Image (cartoon, rainbow, N blue to C red; front, side, top):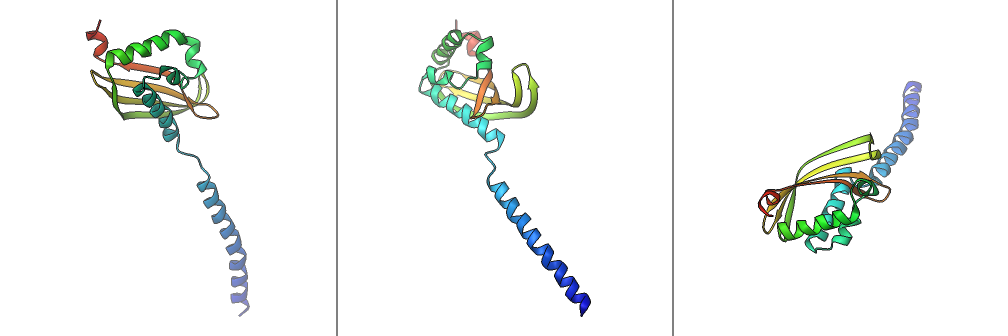
Length: 155
């Protein structure tokens, strides 16, 4: 009888500790933010929404200061305006590939996302690759490559 009582006392001590630990895990997992890919996707979706509206000034707010350290803001604005006029109206984009990196680069230390999309416009299609870095509020575009046959066909 004493052995059973001792075993039950041991279980009763273990039960509250395991219950507290389980509740803690549930709370922590419930408080996590969106996965990195989803957070970066929000920025890219905003980019395409503003491109569709031809609201270039709003598009420029999605780029990080690191981007404008190596690319003149007015020149990039003119490039985006030319993109919209050359490619036609934005229609859709589809994620083709993504990679996540954490660490230090030439643009700073942080979590980086490289996302490649196939993009359809009314006149041409393109492959667009975005490099994004997480700042305190959202992901910002720090690199943008646009590849399309349109750039070879249209003068």
